[in-house]
Structure formats: structure tokens, C-alpha cells
Length: 361
Ligand SMILES: NC(=O)c1ccc[n+]([C@@H]2O[C@H](COP(=O)([O-])OP(=O)(O)OC[C@H]3O[C@@H](n4cnc5c(N)ncnc54)[C@H](OP(=O)(O)O)[C@@H]3O)[C@@H](O)[C@H]2O)c1
Image (cartoon, rainbow, N blue to C red):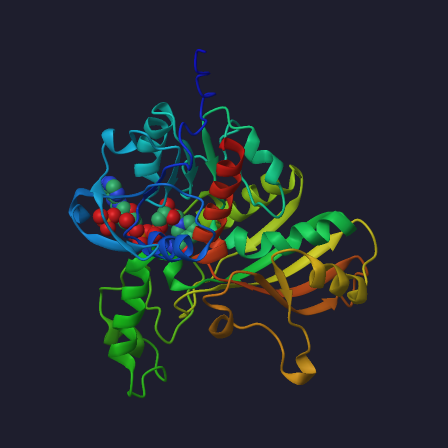
């Protein structure tokens, strides 16, 4: 009997081969720990980074694996390739990996708004991952991801009409360089009385503010991303465009202000969400306390609300401070926290890759 050839994109062996491109970065590092914690569905796991890291050995599933440099050959036999690298590297190499037969799950911004690339959050629109004309599935931005699971659950019940969002974003959103910058600056200001005179923190920190335009220690910076038209930042426009695409609401009104704060990891957001119908806090509590991937932690009288210091390292989206707007019975005010390196990046990517692995096998 002639063997039946595998369908395009199907794993040709028992368990799919996974490549992690960018395995040495902030997201890649968390990815390796998630791969060690989740059900072991993968065959070979290949670790890829820049030539600078080739030869380094990293631990995954309790085994040391040598990092290889990013080349076309590195995708030989790969079924699913996660990309946790800068935009320009993804833009160039994701189509190469897809042409080699891998399904790419890309964490960068390179393909998120491409109409032929689905933008997927498994708790909200898992079906979208099945239609991928370019062989690429995109993972949303960490700020969008930090709130969208909760918003998706509320939308399914109340019908979302508008979001007004302010972010309080951790420095690891800017990669390892962001973490390094905060730690170095904290060392410079620790034990001083800085923060009492105009410019004193700036002088202590000096010109090297890392990936941020201003000092981040003892400060908040109302800016994330690059400058776009009419005063908006790229990060703010991403949250707007990506929320619309994930929820399938192309006309959703969205207004965002992104702010960087001296937190290592875990983004927080305040959200004013306006719905089609009247809302009650009781019903919102019921929805949020049963929604997959969401933890409701909302009893301010007892001091219970999420903060980044407690949420960091956990998987769910944490929601607290749920109130009905005093001036609009169709609107809720919420405070949301999510680990930007887990659900905001690596975890969501791993969940998408697991959906695809289940489909391929
Ligand atoms: N940090 C977050 O919260 C977050 C959230 C969502 C999405 N993302 C996105 O995820 C991606 C990775 O972010 P990150 O924060 O992990 O960045 P990062 O800490 O700077 O790590 C970047 C990774 O890309 C690799 N890389 C850089 N240039 C390369 C090249 N020429 N060839 C091959 N590999 C190369 C690096 O390898 P070397 O170590 O060898 O240089 C490293 O593994 C970015 O697109 C980012 O926007 C980040």
C-alpha cells in the first residue's frame, strides 16, 4: 500500500517539532519556563537566536539545549515556529520559516494588522487561528493582551461600544534592556533623598536612560513606543487597532494613554468600558468570576485588589475595582493587571502554538 503523504503543514512524525526563535530574550526566557511547565506535547524543541548567542546552552524541560543561529536551515523539519524577536527580524524571517513548512506564531508587531494574518487570543477568538493564508498567526501586543480576555468576556454579555484606557506599563515591556535600565537607575537613586527638587533624578541618572526617553526610577513616563501622527504613540494605536481586530468590532471607539512606570514586570490598566446595555456590578462580577483566564479580586474594603507586585509570575488577567460609572449606567470602571511576559507574550503564544499542534496531530 502506498503511504499517504502528510497534509500540508501536518506533522510528519508523532510529536511536532517546535522552534523558539528569540529564545535568549525577555519573552524567550519566560517561554522556556512555560514549555517546561505545560503538558509536554512537543517532540524536539529547537532554540534559535542571533549569531551572538549561538552555542549558549539553555535549560528547557530539564534538559540543556544548545542555541543555534537564525538561518534558513534552522527551520528544517520544524512544524511550529514561535518568533519572540524584534519586528524587523520577524518581518524578514517569519515568511522564510512559513515557506519551509512551519506554522509561525509571531509575537512581534510585524504582521498583526495584516488582513491575511489572524490575531489570536485563545480565550476570545480561538477559531481565528485556523484560517492563516500566510502560514502565520500573530500574537497581540502585551498591553492589549493584559485586558482583552476580561473585555472579551464582558463584551459577550453586554456588547462593548467604547473603551477609554490608561496603562501603567512595566519596564520589561521594552525587553531585557528595559529591566536593565530600571535596575541600574534604582541603584543610582537608592538611599538618597532624590525626588524632591526639579531635575535631581534626571541629573543622578545621567544621559543613559536605556530604551526610555526619560528617567524611569522614581518617575512615571507618559510615553511608550514611537511617535505617530497627531501626538499618538505607536503603543496607543496598537491597543486600539488590535482590540478592534480581536473582538471583531472594526468601529469600536477606543482611546488609550500609555504610561511607563517603575515596575519590572506586569502591566496594569484602568479601563472605562461602555456597553450597548445597562450594566450592573453584580452581573459583571458573575461574568468575571467564571470567565476562563480571569481572576476577580475585588473587595477594596478588605484591601483586596490586584497589584503588579502580587500578579507578576501568574497566568490570569486579574480584575478589581469594578464600579458602575456614576454618570452612565451603561459603563463600568475597572482596574486590570496581567503579567506582560506571560499572558502578555509567552503564555498566549504558547497557547496558540498548542492549538495549532492539536490541529496538526
Ligand atoms: N517584552 C514584552 O513584554 C513583550 C510583550 C509582547 C510582545 N513582545 C515582542 O516580543 C519580541 C521579543 O521581545 P523581548 O522583550 O523578548 O526582546 P529582547 O529581550 O530584546 O530579546 C530579543 C530576542 O531576539 C533575538 N534577536 C535579536 N536580533 C536577532 C537577529 N538578528 N537574529 C536572530 N535573533 C535575534 C535576541 O537574540 P540575542 O540574545 O542573540 O541577541 C533575543 O533572543 C519583540 O517583537 C517584542 O515587541 C514583547
